[in-house]
Length: 178
Image 1: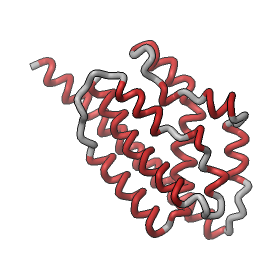
Image 2: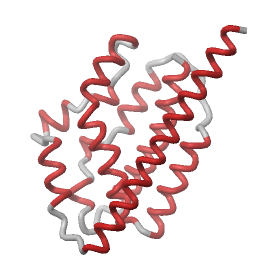
Image 3: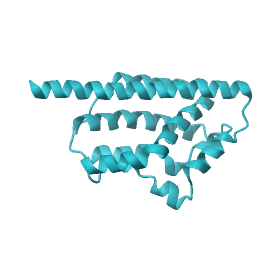
Image 4: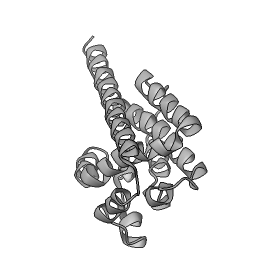
């Protein structure tokens, strides 16, 4: 349970940073096509974290690095936040339904992060429609290359956060065996 809550805490920091930056930079071309309020995950992460009776955990170094990177982009290259939104939300929309079922089996009622009912049912959105909006953005070849590089960076950050979560789990297992 602790490992999962720590992971949620890391995710909350990343999503809340990204979503706040996107909200502030909504006027940037393309941002309104990607930033959809009902797709925002930070409120759902907060709800999941609060549903556990756990202390507040510090962020992993990987999450701190990702948050710092997003803040830097927000200040200097906010259009590249779109690449992170594409990776994070696209991944959740693609695999979130499966992960939700798995999490619900272990932690019943504590998988709101993976709940996209409002996005799909109330807003009439879909993963494919959302992705089409992004793919239709008028970007130059250079801008597409930058977005592609930044999307690869997003995947690296997510991978580092997963490694951090797995390392914490290994340490927790060792401590429990002692």
